[in-house]
Structure formats: C-alpha cells, structure tokens
Image (cartoon, rainbow over all chains, first blue to last red; front, side):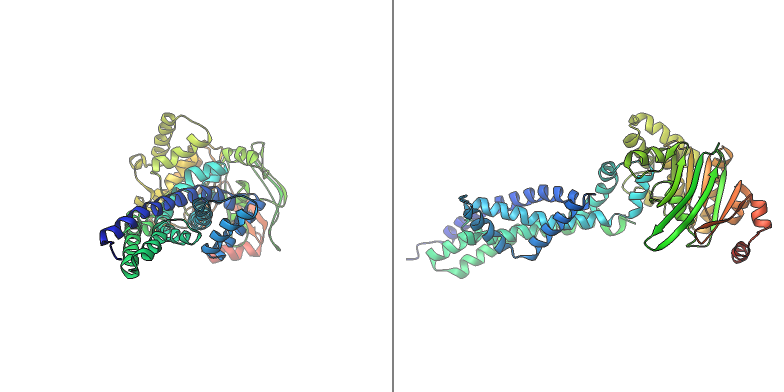
Length: 219
Length: 242
C-alpha cells in the first residue's frame, strides 16, 4: 500500500501551504483595512460609532475563531447564500483579524501622550490634521512590532479553516494521512512548515522592536 | 480697548467648581503673571483661554474671536493665542525645524519654502538656529522649551499663554527660557503666564493676578501685590514662597 515517498508527502503539503500563505495574506491585509476603518470609529467623536466598535471587538474577542468560522459558513447558508469554504474562511478571518488589530492599534494611539493632542490643538490643527501629522506617525512606530507579532496568530488561525473544508496546510495534512497512514511523519512536516512560516515573522517583530527602539524614543 | 476679555467665567469638573466667576481684561502688550497655590484654578483658566477646556458659564474673547466649542471658532481663537506648556510637548518624531514648520504648512497652508524661512527666523529668535535639524530628544529641556516658543511664535499669535513653562526645567536652565520670554515682553507681546518665578513676575510683569479657590483674590501691579498684599491669603502665600 505505501507507495508514497517522503518527497510525495512533502510536495503535497508544500502545494497546500500556498493556500495557507494566500489565506493569511488576504486575512491580514483585509483585516488591516477593516481594522483601520474601525479604529477611526473607535477613537472618533461619534458615540454610536464607538459603541458599535466596542461591541464588535468584544464579540470577536469573546468567542472562539472556530465558532466564527462555523457561523459564517453555515449562517450565510441559512439565508440561501451558497458560501464556498474559501469565501467563508476569508471573510471570517478578515473580520476576526480586524477586531484584534483595531484593539492593538487603539492601544498604540492612546499611548501617544495627551500633551501631543494639546500642543497640536493649541496650534490650530483640526482632528484629522492632528491624526495625520502628529498622532499616527508616533502611534505607528509603537504599532509595528505587535502588529507583525499578530500576523503569526493569523497564520496559525488559518489552520482552523480546515474544519469547514478549506484545503490548506492542515486539511492537506489530514488528507495525506488518510492516504499514507503515517500521521506522525505527516503532521511533523505540517508543524515544520507552519514553523517556517511563523518563525521569521516573530523574529522580525523582535528585530523591528529593537530597531524602532520603542521603549526609549518616546518620552 | 482690551485684547483679552474674560467675563464671569465658571468651570466645573463634576461637582468641583474650579473657576467661580473670573473677570480679567488684558490690554495689548500687557504681561500678566498668574500666581496662586496649586488647585487654585490658575492653569485651568489659562487652558480655557485657548479652548483646551470648555467653560460652563461666562465668556472669553481674544481680539474679537469668541471661545465657542465648535472646531471653526476654536481654530480662529487658537490662531490668535499661542500656548506653551510645562512639558514642552514637542513632536518627538520631527526635528526642531519641522516642529516649527508643521502647523504653518498644515493649518495656514503656507508653502514649505516660506514656512522654512519663518522656522529659521523663529529658531534664531530663541537662539537655536543651529539646532534646526536636531530631534527633541537631542535637546536639553531648556532648548526644547525654546523650540516650543518658536513653534508658537511661527503662527504669529497676538498673545501667548505660558503654563508654568519653567517648572519642569533644571534650575540652571530656567534663565535661558525666561530671558526669551523677557525679550518677547519687551517687544510688546501680550503674555499671560502662570508662574512660580516670583522674581521674574516682579521684574517683568505689568500686573499680577493672585488666584485663590477659583477666584481672582487680588490683582494689581507687582509693586503693590508683592510689597503690600491686602489679604491674609496672599500674605501667607508669599510667606510660603520666600
């Protein structure tokens, strides 16, 4: 039965890993865009906007990603919309990433000293001008390391989409196991590939942190 | 004709009334020192004039610009009065020169080249022309505060509010900032300063305002206020200081 070479296993897993990478990119970029919009609502002047984003974040942080995937996948089906697995996976991960990124960035914006708002106000700047020229440039520097760090969570989060049938690295692992009956080897490789994706990200987060000298530069 | 008119201003933080009806009129070119214990409301008053705090009652106007809580009126007011803070509040991600240029280009839409000329001029005025390209964290406290003054001046305000601008400085750096302020005063700039530098208040200011428990307790020329304090509160305050 076992006509599979190690190379066969690895090749199939690597091919599937492309989808993990793609899904991670889509989730992270989409999540960043949505998260940026939510951020402006969260720290803006409209009470309704702030309340909405607060509730949004609580819901997404307070429920397992798996449930969010199920609800997107099966929930949209209830409305007669036939959702392919890739769409449900992408959508759920975008919304989930947005919730976390908004919260990370809100902390960064709020870490900018209050005096910066006051000084720029006293010079006559309006809200958007303050954000654009004074607050965001400083918040961004603080935000880079945790944001890159969060991208690791996104990559690992994509593994869950295997459960709704999206064929990425984990799902491919299960399928290859079913054919080879060598779960330890296969999942070992799966884990190794995840590690190869995630490790450079966490490492670069550390390097960036040191480079941007977050702790010292802000006083 | 008064330049700054503060009329019956009241301000509450929750149940705590910190300003209980303040009336001060400031003529152009006057230099006013506001003194008093911490908690007497002097900083709050200064922040109200610039619209950093809203007021609950009364009115404030600077050269015809009324303090009203919408962005348009606030901007008009803030273009007339600049403010210097205790903690400098320079933009740490910009060089000294850029700090001085930013609000000109963003708020007044001054072309960059023009703003740069103005920034150089203002930095020179505070004795820091050579620090144009230095970042705030490369400057001493006194230098940072002088850049902050240059930044406010570049907007060509008709009055400056100084909120304890030397309190965060090491003693040996206080004078370099005060001498800049003194020069502004001699050039006819209208100044309102909250300060603990009594000698400076006595030498430079045209009037001294003593605030106590949210009210203007005594007001007058420095010779009178310092030499003949009329109320026991001011006597006690001056006694504590000296």
